[in-house]
Image 1: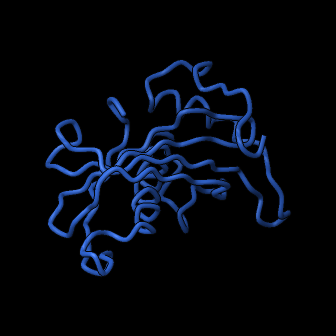
Image 2 (image 1 turned 135 degrees about the horizontal axis):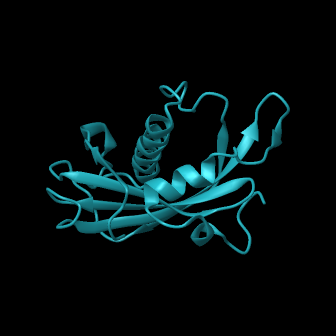
Length: 160
């Protein structure tokens, strides 16, 4: 991932380790989630929407529809860990986020240890159904990513 808009420092905890002394595979999704929340906070700050409430921006909810992880190298307790997040595509009711975990003191100089993707679908928990993305979402993402809005189109996104 080149020049990601959001990079989150991750603290590897002793409890994250498996019997082999490296981070358990399931924790990679927790690290991705931390980067996704950091990205969501940037959107809220840029738009003046206020702080996250239970992980969501006021009036906007989404659910994770699908995730993938590609493991490239083990992560150990002593590692300085950084997780980057970037939105690749935005659909009418969903968005695809890419993640990259690197060890090292800086993201640019770090070594990639895992990559992943996540498909998120906008959701109305009261109605129990998928909903269209907020009107402001695409423009907000384009600003954060430094790309034109039309570059986020995809043939078919999860939930669309």
